[in-house]
Image (cartoon, rainbow, N blue to C red):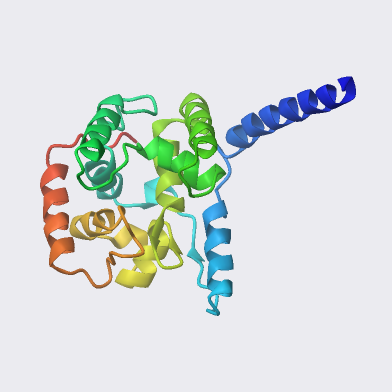
Length: 225
C-alpha cells in the first residue's frame, strides 16, 4: 500500500511539474497543434471523410489591430481587466440558464485558450477543474498579448480551420494581415459556433451580429502592443 501511495504521489508531482513546464515553454514556442485538432481529425476519419486541417501560426503583430478588438467585443469585453475569470459574466450566464434562456457559458478568452491548448471539449467537473488550473497558470506566466496570440492561432474558426491565418486564406482568399475591420468582426461573429456559422457564407443573423460587434468595437480600448 505504501508503494502505491508513493507511486501516486510521484505521478502527481510529475504531472504538476510537467504542466508548469509546458505552460512556460508555450509562452515562447508557437502552438502547432491542439487536442481538438486531433479529435476533429479522428471524427472525420470515423465519418468516412478526408482529413481537413488548415492551420498556420502567425504573430499577433502580423494580424490587423482590429482582430483582437473584435474578439474581445464578441467574446470577452473585460479581457484586459480580469485575471482569467469574469465573475460577473459567470453570474449572468448562470442566471440566464436558470431562467430557461439560451444555454450559455461565462468562459473568458483566457479560459478558452487554456481549454483549446491543453485540454479536450466537454463539460465534466474534472475537465472544468483542469481548465481553471491551466487558466490560472497562463494568466500567471503569460502576458495578455501572448494569451490573445495563442487564442487567435488555436481557436476553431470553421470546419477543419484553426486560427486567423487559416480562416483568412480559406474564407477571404487573403492573408491575415490583409483582413479588414469588417472581416475581423465577421470572423468574431462565428465564434459561438464556428462549425454552424460560416464567415465564408454569412446569413442575415451573421450580418446582424457582425454589425453589433462593429458597434461594440467603437467602445473597446485599443489592444496593447
